[in-house]
Image (cartoon, rainbow, N blue to C red; front, side):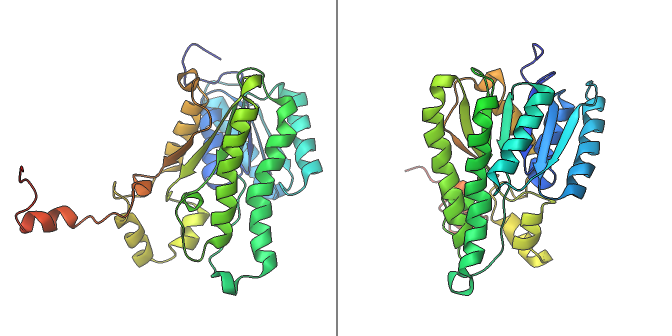
Length: 280
């Protein structure tokens, strides 16, 4: 790495689920910062497309276009382990590990099959464990940064999301537990909890109409959806020397969504009542 805390020249970054959405945005951010990036997901076509995009980003960022892609299902421990070993063989010890594979759909618990619930838990929670467990032997010790991608459902109950709430809460506790267990190896483990992020499959499902999108944005204190680049920037910060004393943290990056229920008209209403601005 260079002296700049936000350059990752020569660093090995592995992103599970890194061929689309927020995770691809994270992978591209590291590639533009000079890292050698490997991504993994189930879809071979997406893997190939992401690999080419990452090579271009890495070259544009001053690197030599090093990027790898692996087709593997996070539910398959052997496949995950094989991808991580191949990435290690090519790029050496892993400096930054991002685990972000996820599944979601909208359904009430009574309208959800046992298999539907299990699939999301297996992808989100078991998949995160598989990635972390298989990667441990290949992580830079000391110095590696592990980042799990969580979600607000981990700590905010949401109707029609019982499967995701359960799985993401498990990821947060896994993050905290392994931050303690792996501290002796000099490995830091944190989670990012993105709020509503534009141009992602998740928001297309959760806010499928213009009305739903407007309502979602109005509920965010900052009044907008986030950008994938903003999540990537936080991942780079958590993996930089600037965050060397941060581990076991679940960091919401959500425009203030995690603060609590937000009513954008509340201040106007209080001012109209002559209450806002009083002292004592």
